[in-house]
Amino acid sequence: MATTGPDATSVVERVDPAAMGALSFDGEEPTVTVEEVADRSAAEESVLEGDADLALVGGPGEWEVLADGSPPTTLLGAVSDVVRTDALAANAEAAGTSVTELTAGTEVRLTDLAEVTEDEGMPEQVTFLLGFGFAFLFYMAAIMFGMQIASSVVEEKQSRIVEILAAAIPVRQLLMGKVAGNTLLAFGQMALLVATALVGLTFTDLDVALPGLAEAVGWYLPFFLLGFVALACIWAAAGALASRTEDLQSTTMPLTMVLVVAFIAALNLQGVWREVASFVPLLSTLLMPLRILEGDVSWWEPVLALVLVALFCLVTILVGTRLYQRALLHTSGSLSWRKGMRLSE
Image (cartoon, rainbow, N blue to C red):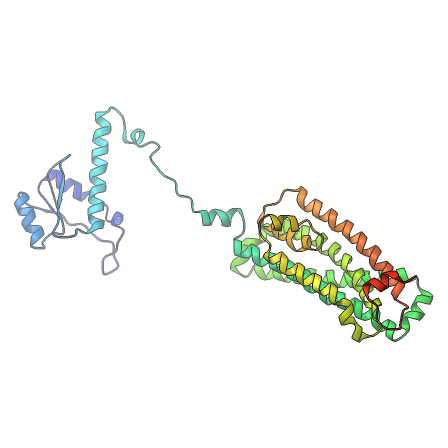
């Protein structure tokens, strides 16, 4: 870079090559070489002949940069920074203050919202994935173990073993045993899958989600337990309504459709409808843990939703027990749900 005096040379010598933000072709930090010339004409000639990339002429308050075509922007910016700093210091001294006091409050702090989101909560994709996992886990457990309950009931009816069992054990206790056994199996399998998933997360980049999972898992467990028990008695009733294994498809179809609709709705509801549905029994088991993961719930919301699930559980136990007791010993063909409720015990 050509200069026309000691002041210009001082400016160029204080240029920070690192501030130019570029590397030379050999990968090393660029350097700025000063070439003093006699006057402006000599500086112009040096630039036009290619001996210098730029020339700095003039003096404080009247600096001028000479270039042949488009100047190297990084070099021009670095020189401008030095000139600006010198001018600011001179103006501050003239005003009887310092550069620090003069520039107070001029800095702008950059906040990366992506990093804030990761620090304060888990990424949105991870939240959806975990919420989907919770919902799918309950859906599969309800279908798989529910059908197992219904199948065991109809097999006992079809083989007439239930008549022997009913003579030795009260029907209500027989039902409670089936529900309790399958609930323990479902809960144990769910706990094993969740524990495996949590351990697996520690080996992936998704381990950022682990700190925020404790509260969601803590609420998910009672929701899962009550939701499954609420359905278990109904599944047993569906098995009692059938007389043969072939009849199970028709008697369990309503339950299967309810679960499919609830699962699809839980994944697609948005806005106010999603918040309202998170208090509806069964749907709350799928939606409330996801809302807790997202962190947009007050403390009373999962409590209220859990109370509503508990009340719903009591209702389904009463209805399921009534159907089970009335239809268990009926072996002359399958029954509809309406006919089952009309039977006498």
